[in-house]
Length: 299
Length: 201
Image (cartoon, rainbow over all chains, first blue to last red; front, side, top):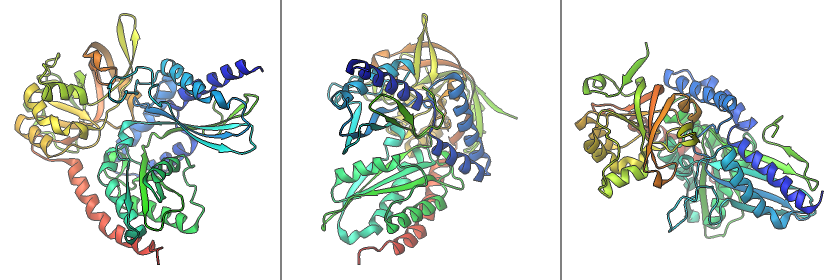
């Protein structure tokens, strides 16, 4: 395959994958939702879970985006240093988003700052957003496509604490956020917590925490324990589906961390709604690909 | 038995409904969210749709051109709390009887619902294809200059729901009551977890 064909091929794969992600939840999210649905017994929780699963079935049947808010499209990339199309990845993803906006169709969600006009095609200044990590000596590329709606972006907050506040300060912050903004952000939520030494590090990590498979744990035993404690504690409050109260609150709690400055503890929280539309795809240098998040999916 | 509301909605249709009840809507439903509220209340522009006795949906749908008209693809509720600053006045100005959205609304909306007899209800968030399948027709669109999400889409709906009443005409507020309970429950939970995460020695 020559270079031009490879660019066309990757553009087409990413346009179809972006389209697909808006219509199908990943396997781990679906599995968790089924489990949480089983636990509920009140009439309101049941009617909400019934609506959620009926909606997913209709989205599949009618080939439509399962939620109308298909977000500002974001790509979190782990790019091999030897991936042959590295120089064109931004162009490829921008074009893929334009195409998926028409084929899916996706809602028009890119509003230019200051001009305050919706561009009508989901591209705009620095959008689609691309976050890069470079993987040495790798010829392939792994991309997370993420569609966060406004509802679950609204709770996004961060704060830099003084060390005296300790990890206890993080716990307080997370609970306060979840019982205020979290209630309206379409629970059961996936909670991403970033901890580091400055606010932008924490914010970025809080979003990356949402891409870990549900049920995975932080590598440090204390980190893993804190995830378990927060998950159980939040579930004990019982926000229930849509905040209408119930047996649980969250699909999971994931913490990502970076070593901090001795004088600061920065933390940030990002949440994913129950309709957590993320997709993971690995593309090789010959443009063969594997969809990791949705087993058996065909584009 | 399914509880139904049909537009135009009269005060006596909704006065007996209580926060936590589940109802379904037949009739005329208009999408109206941030910009629609802002134009009427803050900028003093006249709404191009008479909402007296009708229902609004806090939503920004995905629609597709369908010949001369439009087809509803995906339409779920958006976070109602964003409209809290406008809703009381909005109810007074328009005579709207049913406000549908996602999540709760606050004390201003409660007062508006009590004084002018209106309801706030939630449609399950993220269930946008389910909702679209209950839209029979898009009758017209107004203020399309605001873009697809913010325009006013005038829809005829059938069996639109489930709609869970969150604020009734007597001042009950399901989400505020829930939040008070969540906040009460969280105090001992935070204490217990904090005790176990004192990693800084």
